[in-house]
Length: 157
Length: 435
Image (cartoon, rainbow over all chains, first blue to last red):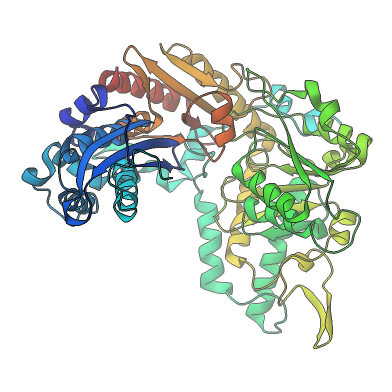
């Protein structure tokens, strides 16, 4: 297993040129997740409009520090999920999780640049890095939906 | 006490160097390759050391020929197993300059420290910690010497205080007089930092603590006992009461650690876990406890692991701890020098090998910004170089130096200057990827 297979050019590009980075207002909920073994941290905000099946991810913004895998993965996430319905977003998140757990092949139509992370599954210590932003997104979004938030523009922590 | 008894300055005395090639031949794992034929360069001994054949064979032989539960048995195997287990205690005691009753086997350093931090909240003895009392630790501690004391303070209403760190990675003792008060009931500190490598003046701090309040002094020697000639009698004279360390960082197996304590202290402390082995007489109305050290060893102990630790102690004694310390010192000096040649690399911890152990942490910066230690470690690993990355269970130290994590290289008896060179060459590759 070569380091080239892990550090795909797409990953390094997202790491060096993160998309949609920075914390933005307004937002519905915010989540702060850490990887206690390595000190990686991410603070992630979601703005969700509508409720129930009609809930839509209007914006995902984040700040954080960490390794290339965690930062690139969060950058990919924001590109993939912004503008989609929450239901679709959850499906994409499940597909990414399956890719990391080695139980899914990784469909480029679903995961876009996320398929570049396929090599991470072979490095168990790095899977947590790749999932850091995704877990924060699921956490924040689940709370946004549960709170029935309709663009509350306030943090529910 | 003589400083050489417990400090790295022992390494300065001239001793013939270790025959590292001969040492390496005893460690089967060092001959293997990783990632399609790359020789293993193992620079993670502060996390756990590799094990020589002598330790592996002692454990195999125990299970193949002598396995039985210890104590309480009259059959041949039980007698042999007991003799091997208690014999391991004798070896550890001799290694430390301790009496055998003062050597308690635990699971690891963490359990040894938790044992102490728990029993200090129990009973009614002179060491009982209560509301208004103070526990003094340092900012340099491994989480295992912070969290048990935080828990103790939460449970008892005591207050946790700590000694800070200077910019060059030493304990900031300038405020020690303020931090040590007549309310200080416990002082617990690390002897050799697992992240900074700093060797702390534990004897000096213990003496001050004893003079101010007679505080109980606990030392986390997890990185010290493997590297330095260790003399608990000398430390006890200075005021140290209890010392915790673990077997797996000193060529022994996992699952066995040691709590050494001054007899008077261990006798005063109440038992930790209750069960078989730690009792004298049990009735439904109440129980009395076994004499030291068994009072603190409830249940079937890690017998094979103790035997393995005994073999590890034999191996280290055979090498000579003066030589082990000198080797560590020489490699650390070489590593600090070679790493100083790497552009953008900053050592977190003392920059010179004086009073410094063999763990070297660093961060790496490039024109594009800092490279996270995970990425450093991953690219090194692809070249066969094994280092540790992250906060090394010492997050307060990372916070103190304003870094999220570090890359740490650490050495032991089998480490070579060639391996340090491989690390430096590997860092050039890291820069190709992330620079």
